[in-house]
Each structure stands twice: as structure tokens, then as C-alpha cells.
Image (cartoon, rainbow, N blue to C red; front, side, top):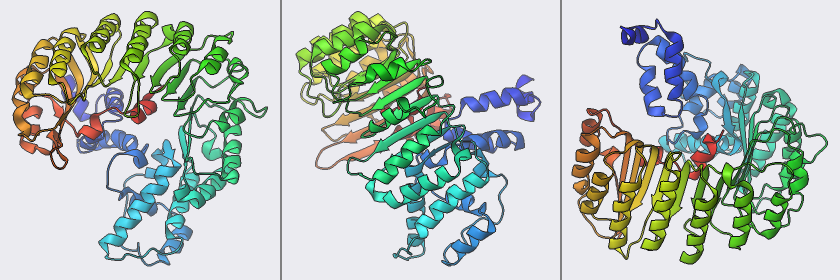
Length: 521
């Protein structure tokens, strides 16, 4: 009875809460649109909150936006005699009004990709002067005219679109109401960018904020943190509660105490793969009279283990998200062991743990001791083994991991280099654990049949309904790289669906650092 009421629309408030829960599950939202008018009316705004960031090669949504341009802008575009037959004859919603999140760089890039696709479709390989810029500027004018209420603005500056960036920022500054209610700001600047005018405009944009809750400083953007946090014009001391530093170099920064002492409601700091986390940096953190609520720490370089020791003494009890290593990491095994032992000693509240490369059994045993230590809180776990030389280590790690996992995980991602029979042992030893999202990447240096692990996944995951979402990618690296994604095997996808397990594309289900940054509250 309750189910029939939901589908008939008798419980709209409950339907809204259900659909809102699917906010980032775009494929399911598309299905919701087709249920009935009510579900469509509730799902469409979520799909159009941030269309520029949806991972797809379909940029036709640009044409839907262009339909909503005012007559003056449409006339200017029609002068190019290119888009006259592209625009829809009618739209059902005011799609621009749903926009909540926009990345200037992604918007510009989406227009460029769309325009390239239009030209290719029409076998035309020349670019009209200024057309792409005209489309881009027209979109932002339309958003402003529709009184879009943004909650997130991402400013990514690169040399590729320097003129576009300059003009868009100038337009935004001329219409401050467009960004008046911004809660989240994100900045990232290409290392080759040296446009003083753009940097000044970004500083002006920062000082316009009245209700800023979260800010992300990306690579080469740390100069802006002084504009935001030390400027007399800044209004964030009583509003800002989250700061994220991503690929930032702290070298030469010596006013951290002054900055953080001014922030009265700061609740969390996130340090993601930053540089120069040395004695100078840590000593400034220690000198704070306020708590330094370090919620995330992802490291791929640190000069002294003592610096990390002091940092975790100060803030380890706040730490919820930790990652160690990466492709460019050159941590010795001894150094990595000391890092993990410090996490065990000081950090009891880890929810998100990401470990890259496990070269020997000693390190693996420390990791399992850590997992055992944080099992009551652990929710997201990523283990990337990728040890091509010693398959025995992979087997031992998988056996121990399966026995160590908590009874329920929101997310488990494994990057493997193993034989199918070894993976069976992991699935069997972890059979008491339920995974909401299970993501597997199997990298093999020998060719083989992709389906060799599927019988075990079906036996221990599918038939026992131990996952809600599943993604599996096999990469074979003999002579040339060959990638096969389970999502592309339609018969297999339907079989998993019959057991209430949804198979998704590996890229869409995997939680990389960029997606994790977007999900930080």
C-alpha cells in the first residue's frame, strides 16, 4: 500500500527525500525522470544542479541552455548561421534556474567540446573567430538574468582560456548578486599562469563574500588565502567552517597562527597531498591557542617523521580521513612503517583510509593492525597493491584483509594484481562483510579471459547479495594495454540487476580524490 502511494504521488515529501538521496547517482536519476510527472519534477532539478561536471561526452545540454537565451543573444549567435537548427523547439523546464554549482573552467571547456562536436558533425573543421567565447559569455549572462542562486563556485585558471577567464570574472564582478549566496569557493591556478589582472579580480571576488562556509585552495592559489583570511575587507571570520588545501606548497608561509586565530567558527581543516609540511609548518600549528581540527590528511611527501609526530600529537584525535602514498611517492618501507605506527598511536577515529603500494608482509600486518584499531569507525577503504613481482604477497594481503574487514563498509576499492583463485579466497574470508559500493581494478601482466573472476564474484557477492553497487575493471598489459569494464558486458549487468546489485562504470563508481573533495562538508 505504501509503495503504491509513493508511485501515485500521495507522499510527495517522502518521494523528495528518496530522490534527494540519489543526488549523485545520475543514471538512477535519469530513470526517476521516466516514472511519472511528479518524479520527473523532483529529479530534473538534481540532474541540472551541476551539469558541467557530470562525466559524459554528451554536451547537448549546451543547446538546451542556449534555448533560454534572450532574443538579443540569440540574434547574435544566429549571425554565425551554425546553430539555427540545433536548438530545441520547446523545453519543459527553466533549466538554468536549477544551477547550484559551476566551475568556470569546466563550463568553458564544455562549450569548447560541444562546439568541436557540432563542427565535426557538419564536416566543418574551421573555428569562427570569437564564437566559442560568445557562447560562453552568453551562458553566464543567461545564468545571471535567471537569478541563479549558486552555492558553489570553482575558479580554475589556466593559460588555455586566459581571455575567457578574464571576461567571465569581469562579468561576475559586475553582477555581485550572482555570487552573493556562495557557500563554497574553490581555486586552482596553472603553474604557468601569471595574469595579475585575473588574480586581482579573484581577490575582489573573495572580498564580496558574506556567507562563505567552505573554501578550497588548489595548486598555486595560496596567495589568495591572505586576501581572504587577512584582508580587512574579508567577512569570513564568523562564517568559514571548512578549509581545504589541495596540492598547496606551504614553503615560506609564516603567518598561519595569525590566520587561524581569526577564524572563530572553523570546524575542519583538510590537507590533501600538500608540500613543505616541515618543522616550520608544524611549529606554527603547535603554537595555536585554538584547536587545529585536522579532519583529513593525505600525504605523498614529508621531510621528517618528527614533524608528522608533532602534528598528530596536536590534531590526531580529530583525524577522520587519511591516505598515504601515490605514484610519485618514494617513501622507504621503514618510513612508511613509522607513518602507519603514528596513525595507530594517535588516530582512533579514521573513517576513510587510502593506502598505496604494499611491498612486504611487515607493512601489510601493520595496516591490518590499523584497520582492526579503527574498525568501529571505518567506512571507506582503498587498498592499492600493484606489486607485480611477488604474487605471494598479494595472496597473503588478501587473505588477511578479508578476515580483518568490519561487518559493513560504505565503500571498498581494491587495485589488484592477482590470480582469480586468490581473489576467491578474499571473497570467501570476507563473506561476513556487506559493501554498499564494491570497486575492483585488476591489473594483469598476462593476458587472460576477463570472466575468470566473475564466477567467484557471483558466488560470494551476487548470490549472497553482499553489495548494492559494483564496478570491475580488468586491465591487461601484455604488448599493449587492453581494458575491459564489467559495465560493458550487458548480459552480466542484467544478471547482477536480477539480484538487486547495480553494476556501474568503473570511472563513475570509483571515489578518486577529486570526488572526495567535492563531498567534504
